[in-house]
Each structure stands twice: as structure tokens, then as C-alpha cells.
Length: 319
Image (cartoon, rainbow, N blue to C red; front, side):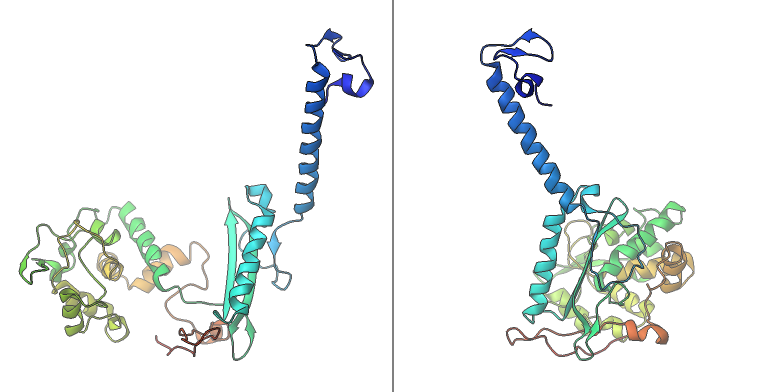
């Protein structure tokens, strides 16, 4: 709001809008207010120039599971989001990554989607919102959400010992740094599995516990040659890396949780997750196996290359 006296030519010190005497030098204050108003108007004009809609790549089709919105409508910056595109294109252009697809949503609305590179370097197939990719450890939060659904149904308690459903976890032992094996001070609970505080590992390091995992066939590649039930049964008989609840370690805890859910629900984990999460949420492309008709949409996977600026060779395909 600009004081009327500044625009109407009223005498200094008097505002014609109110006809009230202003403090000495009131016209200076009015001028400052006018400058502030002009700056605000310029900022509004600049902002409106950016409100062109969501930042969606032109070569991506319009099939999206969420409504679209301009970034500013949900409290984000069009200018700042556009920097992600430059960063993404740079990584692919340098040869460090074959492809990147980034999508950002806030408050239930999609405001940004950008594709860099390809889903398959050899064929040059584009990386789009329809490309299927491996979730790897993002499977963990999905399994954990599934567990909480069963928890809400009253099928188990968070402080319930895992051994109630998985007998091999009874009488747990801990392998100390000294090499001594002692009884665990408490049982492994569902809460421990959900928070990676159960004392389990991945069998991918050089500690005594990791070596025990490897000797039992429970190293990092165990899920590729053992069924989930056999795998978890073996893990339950191995010593823990620490007393449950006394430390944190990224581990096979979620694998054990998945088996626990199978026993509690009476369903295989893939079917349980489909009925509990994927189908209700419309996640039609999520699952543990890619059906033949969807394989053309399945992104290739690559291993790191030591050569600078060069994408590595395709990694061995595993189930």
C-alpha cells in the first residue's frame, strides 16, 4: 500500500488520504514504503513468470498416479528444482551413471519429473516413469509397513519374543569380541527386528560373527540359493553380534521379519504384501518377480567401473 500523499502531490508532512498531519519527514517514510511496494511488485512479477506449471519432461507421457501442480503451489521453488535436472544430466553425461529418473511430489501432488540417460545403454531404451527398477533395500520399509498392518490387527506385540513363532531364535547366544560365547541377556523381539537392533549382521564383514555367517552359508548371497524359511532357520541358530537392544547394525533383520510375517499370517511373503499393500494401493508393477510381458520395461543393471567416465559392464542377473 502506497501512501496517497506520495502519489497525489499533497504537501510534505501531510497525507491527503487521512488529512492528518504526519511526523516531520513523513514523506521520507512514504517514499521508503513505496520502494518496498515496488520491490514486492517486481518479486510478484518474477514469481508469476515461474508459475508455468509442474517441471515435467516434455518427452514423458501424461500417465501419472498423482495430480500435477506448479512447485510454488506446494511451497517449492521452480528455479531450485531445475538445478536437479542440470545435476542429473551432468552425472549421466560424464559417463558415471547410465540413467537417472527423479520425481518429486509434495502434499499429494507431483511437481517435478526428469529423466536423464537410458534404461539400457546397449539398446538406448529411454528411462521413463514406466521403467521397472529393482528396489533392493527399499523393500525394507515395505515389509515393515506390512508388519505394522498386522500389528494393528492385533496379531502380535512389538515386545513379543521372535522365538514364539521362530523356534530357532530360542536360547540366543552372543559372540563377544573376546571370542567368548555367552547367553543373550534378553530375547530378540519384533521391535528389535524393526529397528535393526537384534544383533544380526549381513555376513559381509570380517568380524567373528560375520565369519560364522559365511561358514553356515548365510553370507550376503544366501538369499539367492536358500529359501526364506531355511535361511532364517540357519540365522536363528548363529550367535548374535551383541545383546539385543544394546546396539544398531544394518542386517538381515528385515528378512527375518518377513519370515515372521509368513508364519503369523499363514501366507507367503509375496502374496501377503500384494494383498496388504500392493493391490490396495494400486501398486500394479510392484512385486518380487517381473512377469514375461513386463520384461521389456525392466532396466538393465550395471556394476561400477574403475575406468573414469565409463559405465561398468552389466551385472550378473539374479532372481
